[in-house]
Image 1 (cartoon, rainbow, N blue to C red):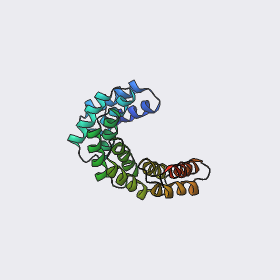
Image 2: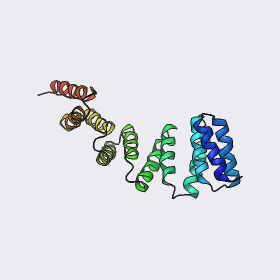
Image 3: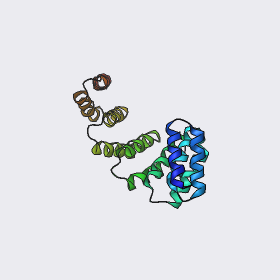
Length: 191
């Protein structure tokens, strides 16, 4: 047996939803070649799907320590840590992922969401803007910026994003709804 063969069987079983068989094949791939990080990455994902985040965390830590060139591991590990409510560590790994993969817009979105949750608005805004800069018409990024500025009480900064959503995605009501929230909030502001 080759590690890659067992890895491929693991992928097949994971795609079929047979997680225990996927786990067994990924573990066998790692037994054959304990440096075969693709099997470790996939096994960590299977553990996460099975609700065993502790084992997933151990595998991701092993990958980033032994294979620091595997940039995807930092991103996946950061997301796992956020799921485990280890927010400070999650930010560290997501920042490293962004550094290693500066064109991956979704990293910045996730990093911004986490920073916003951790009440780091300056950092969150920068991350959201970076995501939008990489994908200027992404509705999620337009929405998150509009919502971010609404929450900050910066309605004049929120409005252009709501207008862009309304213009680019007329089939959705979200742009119009955001504009209504902005207009209602402005009417409640002291004059």
